[in-house]
Amino acid sequence: MLHITDLHATAEGRAILKGLTLHIGPGEVHAIMGPNGAGKSTLSFILAGRPEYTITGGQIMYRGQDLLALSPEARAAVGLFLAFQYPVEIPGVSLMIFLKTALNALRRARGHEPLDVAAILDLVRTKAEGLGVTDEMLRRPLNVGFSGGEKKRAEVLQMAVLDPSLCVLDETDSGLDVDALRAVAEGVNALRNPTRSFLVITHYQRLLEHLKPDHVHVMVAGRLKASDGPELARTIEREGYAAFQDSAEAGAA
Image (cartoon, rainbow, N blue to C red; front, side, top):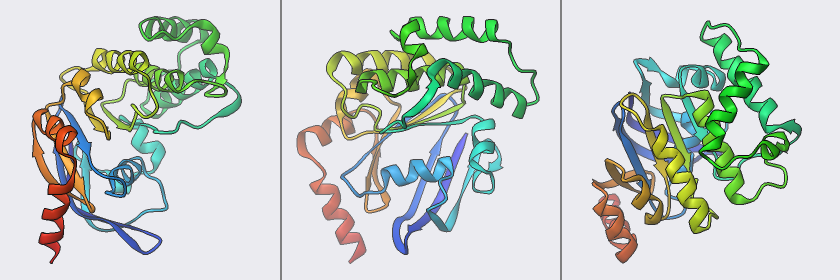
């Protein structure tokens, strides 16, 4: 599915990713944890195609294609979705209109006929029901005045409607209370299947208790320093990142 090999990247001349290698198979859920400044969000932005990052080495192959050669729009068309830590507000554009526009843009890019309004309304309402997204919320301007939980539920709804094959969640649990966290996790779990993969970036083990990832990785100073199962997240919750930072410093010496 996704193969990142020896990836190096800079922003404004500063090295951020320093030889990162990660492989995600179909249907797998991988989580990346790490201290602030480790490069976690940078990785998500590079996958989505944000232009302010310069790739200085390595490669990213996604479903047999060179991901770095594709525009952000083309990456979405081949099935990549990024859920933001801080979703953008779009005044004047309702959540429903946004979903209709995005879905039909993807369908055209993939060579399919666009859906009519009735078909999209039926699809969105069906997907929204299980996420606690009401018709009133669908009519509101996208993310304008939304609570933290509403913003994250709206992004999970986007995933459900747009049907990506790789979902990158950049600190989706940030700012959520217990109930909102559970609702988002249940929505993500409902989307899991043998062909859809997830890369979950988080600071907290509490989200992973719900998602039960196949692999957990620790990122420090632009590299993955450790990989294991869900128990690694529990170790970090108890002990923090000090041991991994010490090993990173020793490796750089």
